[in-house]
Image 1: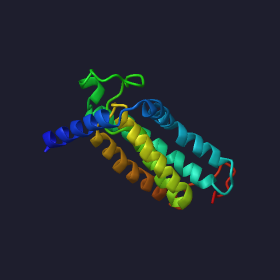
Image 2: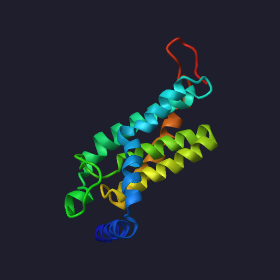
Image 3: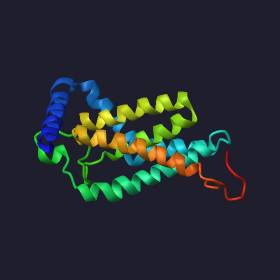
Image 4: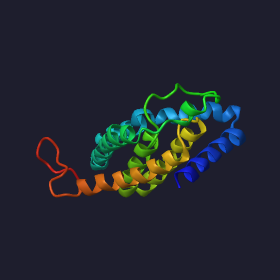
Length: 186
């Protein structure tokens, strides 16, 4: 089974690299991927939401989800699974971004993006639809840039969805989210 997944991973990556590579995407995909670096776009989104009374609760839940992504994905799963990145194995492909130093599974960019999109979608359907579109673009950029296998992306999507729902569930516990001044944030 593992060999079948590995073969499929390589087939998809090589198809993307051989079929879709072009000058336009060589410029766009690194920029899209950079938005997901360290969850930057999602952290910025959460911080901006904190300034709006209407969106403050969503911003706080988003920060909880991103914290869970960091701990579960980057601190626990990546070192535990210790999967090499495709660019470490196939060094013949020219990278368009600096070589990553952490392990491949799950894709942290994808994990954070789908957790964030899940939280945003639950709070605001329109904003969430846009967040899911950006999450898909960030996930695809990681394949295009040859730094993740498709199964890393799929794992990031599934775990991100679960973490998004977990953060929402934690936030719904009585007294879970209240501000420093003792008033409950709605």
